[in-house]
Image 1 (tube, one colour):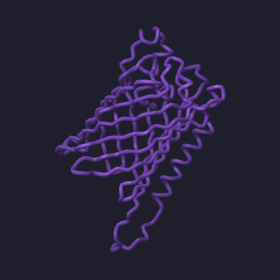
Image 2 (cartoon, one colour):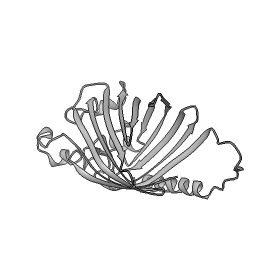
Image 3 (cartoon, one colour):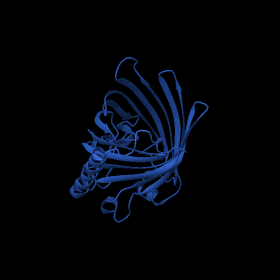
Image 4 (cartoon, one colour):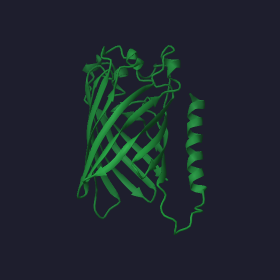
Length: 264
């Protein structure tokens, strides 16, 4: 697990340094390229995915890179470290590392931004904690977003068809999963602050003892390429839903999450 974390940190820092050190050889009069490469590197107080802790409520490092074309096509890779202790401290153990690879098509039409694609979740160490079966899975997704004044509204859905990962959830016999969500975000005029909110619903093979709702509300402060975010993240899962078990409730309880992200 430690090796995986160090490897992910090294890869993230290497990519960031590479882009920071690359000189701009193109002539200022050259037309803009059809291809754009962007990325992020972040330190986060804990990794929460759809309201549930994926890092045993411990800090993580994360990084991403996206290659996009002016046509609207794009491909991205995202990674995060995570704690792994063979389910001793948490019922959610993703094996120490997550790497996501996804791609799709995003375009604005008539003031509405459409985004559709395929998302793959890879957990290199998960087979070590799941008796030889990994937790990898694939989803298809789609969303629409509209900006009205300073406010942007977005709704979307992720659908995971039947696949082996659902063998690992003994609390749900469902062989697929649907995640629907809505988001609102807005910058505060005249300030570097922005507000954001997220509400989602998980139903199917990824239920956590029941179909559940997750939420996030937070504020971000941006200075140049750096963004500091503080958010409240939680679910509607109660202690009674998990048999009054602190062990089972801990990944789902509401917590404050702080992150510092550098964009390049």
